[in-house]
Image (cartoon, rainbow, N blue to C red; front, side, top):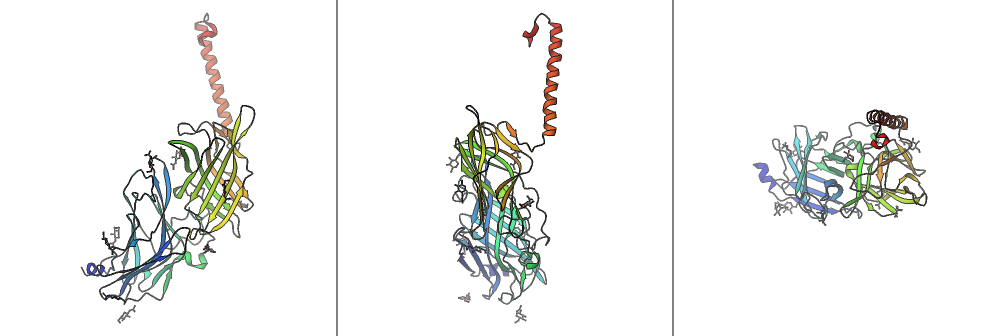
Length: 426
Ligand SMILES: *[C@@H]1O[C@H](CO)[C@@H](O)[C@H](O)[C@H]1NC(C)=O
Ligand SMILES: *[C@@H]1O[C@H](CO)[C@@H](O)[C@H](O)[C@H]1NC(C)=O
Ligand SMILES: *[C@@H]1O[C@H](CO)[C@@H](O)[C@H](O)[C@H]1NC(C)=O
Ligand SMILES: *[C@@H]1O[C@H](CO)[C@@H](O)[C@H](O)[C@H]1NC(C)=O
Ligand SMILES: *[C@@H]1O[C@H](CO)[C@@H](O)[C@H](O)[C@H]1NC(C)=O
Ligand SMILES: *[C@@H]1O[C@H](CO)[C@@H](O)[C@H](O)[C@H]1NC(C)=O
Ligand SMILES: *[C@@H]1O[C@H](CO)[C@@H](O)[C@H](O)[C@H]1NC(C)=O
Ligand SMILES: *[C@@H]1O[C@H](CO)[C@@H](O)[C@H](O)[C@H]1NC(C)=O
Ligand SMILES: *[C@@H]1O[C@H](CO)[C@@H](O)[C@H](O)[C@H]1NC(C)=O
């Protein structure tokens, strides 16, 4: 009851316009006061969300939800020994985010994060199939922080659950503040500690290892070996019809001071581009930090035969926080992934595309058709030579032989039974 009264006290919320033109990111600062007008819960942080949603044409799109300038903080609660502290903000067209904190004698820690996004917000979800609020609740395993210490995490942290990636950075938070004074002693997240620094650019770099939770140390200090990327399904439409289909796992290999592997996360990647009769482009955007554009073209093989091929790839890596370009690589002289027009190209084995001397793209389970897609499905595939034909050829040859033998046997039987009918029965 005491806490309820406290929470109805005037709260102070400052909204600072971040200096980030590209993303329009805002820092939120919430200063919750208790009865005696003393700060009891303080937080300042930046966050963004990448949300994958189903569109009205039944495919999936990723969109980025940023904090808008209209943030309120209804429902924030100081908390005490028996009640959790609650940091709650509402923003934009019906979106909200909250985190509750629990306390022991010595420490406090974040407990659950609750995020609700509203697909009625047509600016963010222009073509959502299902309109209305969607709530994602997840338990956070932030390490316990000493009471009176302030938790600080400048590094970018990712929290993935269901179709949402929550991205946080420049976080300062203290719950159960004593005597209205923010602690002088900082408790840093592990990602901020120099000793553990794995070389990771502030891009989607650690998409695969990014399931570490917000405000919590990375599970291990040693970087995990990068796994094979998850295969993503991407498509483009012209009107109601699919005009380009791609299914591929993508991994960027960036050579800098230390080699860096970046797996493209299909969950946070959106596709757009353009279809055409002789050129087509597929542009992939992974969380506004990795942009890859594939350009396809058509070439004449003979008077009557045409093939499509991958002509150009360019890759732009952006700083996730402020959108500035980290690196850009372009190769407009590629001639790979070719197959006859009207068919699709498939390569299950790992293949490498040289974009330039510092950037390669490794592709896995590739299946692509940039032209003449009919009935929203892939046409017959032409497989790359890398795919194991030592198995395929015997299978194909074997099947053909078996078919031939069956035909001969049938023909023989029919021939014997109706010898007068001859070949006509066949
Ligand atoms: C709380 O303190 C602020 C300034 O520190 C003051 O402006 C405000 O009136 C105070 N509110 C109450 C309820 O005492
Ligand atoms: C809290 O929410 C109500 C509506 O739900 C709104 O009228 C009110 O202005 C909000 N208060 C603050 C402080 O945001
Ligand atoms: C924190 O919030 C979650 C989700 O709303 C809730 O289930 C949990 O009970 C809360 N924790 C406390 C200690 O109130
Ligand atoms: C999908 O939504 C968009 C935007 O509201 C609309 O223009 C389009 O007609 C819709 N398509 C279908 C198939 O409902
Ligand atoms: C809060 O104030 C009390 C009484 O003035 C004092 O004993 C205590 O040490 C203070 N705590 C902190 C964290 O400053
Ligand atoms: C991608 O497409 C393939 C075949 O079209 C399907 O088997 C697979 O489940 C799809 N994957 C996802 C994540 O939708
Ligand atoms: C990444 O590129 C470097 C230099 O080109 C190469 O030595 C290394 O094997 C590549 N790694 C992978 C996983 O492709
Ligand atoms: C990437 O390639 C596309 C297609 O060629 C081109 O339109 C675009 O300008 C390129 N982007 C950059 C940054 O060079
Ligand atoms: C973006 O951030 C990086 C690293 O923090 C910095 O080097 C770069 O100058 C920034 N760019 C802009 C446009 O602010």
